[in-house]
Length: 478
Ligand SMILES: [Zn+2]
Image (cartoon, rainbow, N blue to C red; front, side, top):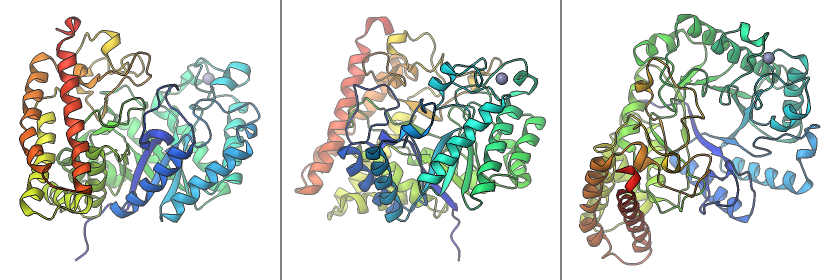
């Protein structure tokens, strides 16, 4: 019997260094540094992704983050060219396809917009969508990437940084506007490279907490005729209401997918053993329903595999995408076998229980709704960054959980313990995590290679406990 599986099992970078084994403290997010460390992490991660059953890696930042130079081409030094070619070689050698993360009219044009009034509208980070020169510039970027690199597809991101609201652009409503830019970009890529996989992501399409109405959905149906995959990511809720989903998927010509319902956004500045947050039960529940409604594509966020909870999440979810009838417990058992090789059956069961209980400890205690009035110093900084529903802000729940402040204006701080936990919840999370320590003690009786990996889990849990204690002692938060 055929297994029920997702066809496009995409691992989402997001950015080049999000899988990195070491934090980057001295660069603004998102860093596009390429060095020996990221080369080596890349090698390990792509091999791991293949083993877990992913088909593609979707990556931003191979060439730039916010700033294409005016002539586009000078972004590429001979050194960068050979580094990027090498990374692409690593991806292809692991049997994965590369989906290039492409900012559409935004993400990459900040400096050009500053210097050129012919592409400038009202948004310092997004080209005006009504000017001829903006479209020419977008084409130039695509030509440059297509000519120089062996990419297998494009992730089109038009809405993440907002839009132009000049007199001309404002005639179009948001969803129609973003769909037009995506559609026009997709059509251009199709005309030159018809075989490339084209994916559109909805981040920023609407304020978080809002749902698309029928006019907006129809506009997506049109877009769907020109692309392969429509990802309604769900960073703070999906834009297609769950009740409308199966009917919508049925009407849509391309695939529909999400980012898995829940994920930890990879923190650039955090020590890699500062959190322990398995979410296999949480995500498989979402993905099973998604499959039931007809979805066959999704893109799940990556992170540093050196964190044992991240490693377990990515492994189990990759396996799940190939057979959605599997239970989360069965997946974690397999994960423990493949990643830890414990011989003693009691130890094996203990480790399975540890992952299971650590997940429950978080989800039984957090508040999915964002708590209000967190002082800036201790907040994730996304309140002013994104648009939120005016009427239904309460619907905007992660989706994406930020552990540290995204833009990093303040020293690294475990913002998830303030945005989603009050004093009482933290205390209860702390108690549940402490209950895991005796299991850990018994697990640490094993020897050799296994022991060192279990020591990493111990350090992650101890560091989380330290963070909770530190937050509990901050007067301003109590
Ligand atoms: Zn405009």
